[in-house]
Length: 130
Image (cartoon, rainbow, N blue to C red):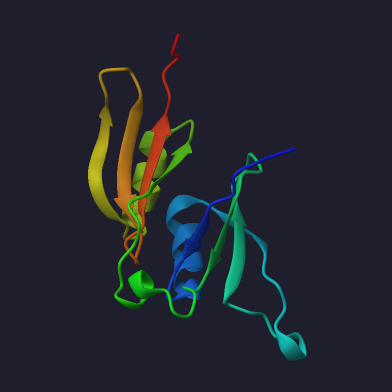
């Protein structure tokens, strides 16, 4: 079996984790224990209700783009059923809204938001494409 699991890099993993849980409805899937049994905030896995998940960690040492605070040009798209309710939740949690809820010419309903470290997220209810 093959699958794609996005691995997102954050300078403040704990803050990003809390934001994604509160604003976008993720829940913690796994957080490996650090030495001495303490929880590590350098690597976290979050999941959605459908079982899809992401990994999160700190930027690699020596990663020049991360050191300058730059991110790659990627949008994480999450398919959801109720775009309007999700938008209201994200906005109430303080998400930076890039595009308000709207319908595109193909019939998809979506909005876009940025998390506290600049990752772009798109939440969409796809229309039936033939």
